[in-house]
Image 1 (tube, one colour):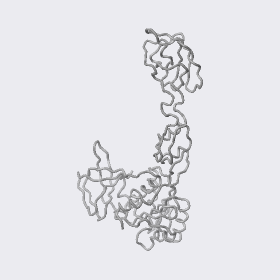
Image 2 (image 1 turned 135 degrees about the vertical axis):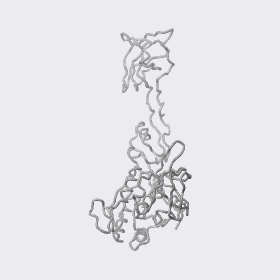
Image 3 (image 1 turned 30 degrees about the vertical axis):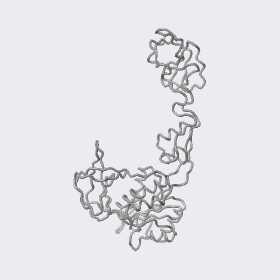
Length: 399
């Protein structure tokens, strides 16, 4: 059995990024760029107005106010070849429209009066006002994103603004969920004595959804049969980058996952970590796929997802993984039964200058309802059995 720090180091050493792929930009959100992205155009590609108003040559405003200048024409956004501005004239111009040749300044429509096709100005502005120069946003040849830049929703808009439809990224991994256990049945089925409904895959798929990870559920439930487990896992290695199983990793007679890994000539990175809950977790590599064997107890599934699955996926996507963590103030007393490094579910609330942690009561690995409503974990040291209200604790956000 290894420590949590040792497990993390093993993951960071062994799990590398996936090969880059070319994706449509809308599918690249949440991924890291696989190469530097450089603009091949200026944005905007022309001098344009940032207000509805009039475009003029500033030097035409000679003498004292008021100035009266005839309107030559009107330029709308999208006009691609406005006629050059004649000396001593103005053009009505709309927001986003290109400035005509010879114009260098825009005056807001609110600051002028128009009578009989003549624009009357009482006050000068400054030369160049309300003009967005060509390349003001992005210049041709400018590096927009470095390699391994995480793409946000706004970043996708930036890519679209320079005309890109596809980019090279480190993709989301292809993820398979497999629930194991002959006692497990799908919700909606008739529940017989000795059976229980599958909650684990629903918890995992929901957390993947919250984090925008595409995931596929493989088979509703896989019974505890060695040959069937081996066949399904082998097939999954041909199509998925990571497989997540729940159950069948502990010390029981029917806990076959470690044996399946060996039969498929996989490499076990580690099996059992000195934490509670979630001790029996198994991480293994089979061909080019990673298998995360989580214990069947539902609270252990949640802990294992937080501690190991998120880290492995981040490594696969070349995203530096740093759990969101802070020091928080305990809202209530809490007790913890165990000698290992502990993770106690909590509802974390942010307040000005502090975070308050509301610990769950009577947490039990086998009772999913004992952690309902949590959004994080309080981390307890080994052999720490109690924490008092008002005490400062280290916490990590689940999502």
